[in-house]
Image 1 (cartoon, rainbow, N blue to C red):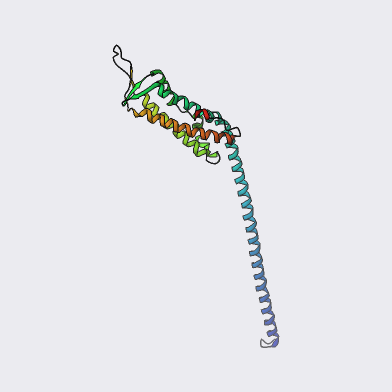
Image 2 (cartoon, one colour; image 1 turned 90 degrees about the vertical axis):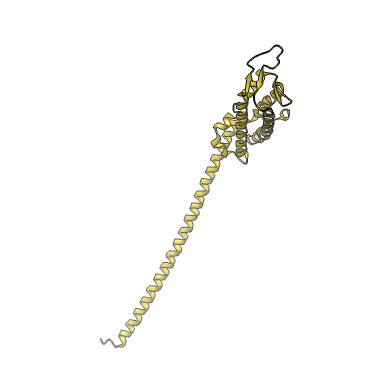
Length: 224
């Protein structure tokens, strides 16, 4: 068979056809594989989205459950806070009075008892779960942290003031005031202002907290 014969030309033509067909088939296969890969990637993305939503729903459900438990745990403490602060506030004018910048201790026992009460936390349960209050909804968590901060400020003020009450080394006939306060006269004014501010916020918070728990808001008009 001569290489220049027409038969070889026919074979070359068919070879070109075969090669072209193979290339086309390869292209189709690559395109098909790419399409399948794209579809699979889309399916994986949808599955991942579904898993992420499921996990998010589980987290939210757990957070709601934790918030409900916290609500029941702290309900009594939060509800009684305005009354406990009012008890401390009411005792101040009965225990001391300030005349011309001088503190006169009218009732030493009442004063020390009041300051001793104030130097202890009024929200101990809330402080014990400080790391979990972010589970409370809306602004209840941050606002509870604010109340805890107010309690800390009150405790510090009361502790310092309690240490400034001194008994007179000598008592003279006719001397009315046996105890003296070795601090600034406006300490009591500052403490009273802080307690009133603290109580005001505690009333607002107690009403919102009780609504969250699912009980009535309560009547705090007496403590206004």
